[in-house]
Length: 226
Image (cartoon, rainbow, N blue to C red):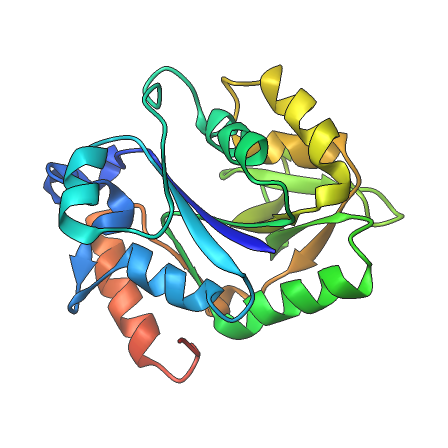
């Protein structure tokens, strides 16, 4: 499959950290978020593309990312449009990772193994255990299929998943109709199963204080990383 990192947005909640580069290219402890994510995906993807928008010229000049996909209209649309751009360009299973998320490599491996076991019949979406209604979440029915996504009571979306090539055409159609939505809106509309990720094996960088949390997480025995 092909790995894809969605990193077109600025990340305004990071304040001055994103004055020059998008959130995925913030450097801490000598490495960018993007570099850490690319290393996480390396064992499970044939290659890794990255969707760029905000300050893409700086990113291309300074970091020379693998297979960049530039999205000039990133300010006009939500990241559903970023995933659409990817699916229209890449004819493969897509292992997608939000540009502000770090996940334990073992969970990436479990996601890939589960996808293989299901023979690509379903998409997979990572989520955190426990019901909540303050962040974007997914809800499932008794059969284990995703039925809803958004600011709802459900399991918080973990920012990682796999879109199966089997459902590529249907996913493209859904996303074309929902360019102003977040890309996980595709999951309830095509066959998708959830995979719960332990919260101690996942971290999301949204605010400057999260950088310290990320440093502690990366240094702890709770995380396993490339």
